[in-house]
Image (cartoon, rainbow, N blue to C red; front, side, top):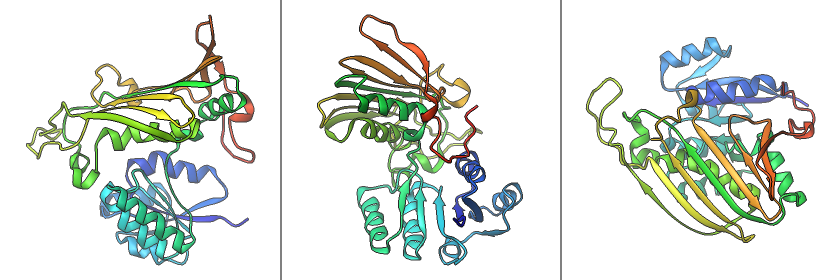
Length: 307
């Protein structure tokens, strides 16, 4: 099998921390091009990522015959136009969440990918964590019994200074809801199936009208807290809460993550910082930490190091 030749559009921290390491450990993939409007960052990544082809114009990536697939990790408001350019040029696309700043943008991207006959996906990576895959197995095997409750808490202790473009509704779409809670909605549906109905609320407590160096800027227009109550088609109910203002939950930048399923036979918990373990307990017991079985630690043929 020949390598998939991948280009990255958006050379910021997300690509550096997540996407490039993922490409590097998989012999089936190769990073062949980088695109970013920041010339200084572009040259930095050219050296750090050892990639010769760099450009500030995403159209050059879309029209490059030596690129098979594209990872888009740019600001939310740019996803739609970049995706369409790449899809129409026959490139497979992995676009960071949210796909667009509106339903209409996301649906348009979906339809254009269908027309072009290419793969188009987003980076809902949590569902692939070993502990999350094992949690899904426990549900499907019946070990948890009939699922009754789903509970998600994602707490971050972020500074109350400006988020830049991320605090504009036009450019970001939303705040915590689009940035963090969106992942929890995805893996909840992967575990329990479609959400039948829901209600919720968002709130903003931090004005974020100053930059980190104390300069005045336009105040935030988006949420920094969100909460949802929902009912799944399977009959289970769910509760989601997310916030960027949880003091004391910094945890070296990883924050606090707790996703719990309560079934008629047992409860099980996923934690972001422990991808190779879950918590589990049955009636009359306390939750205990147990290792994820080896078969769930990586997919067959994966080069992932699980030590």
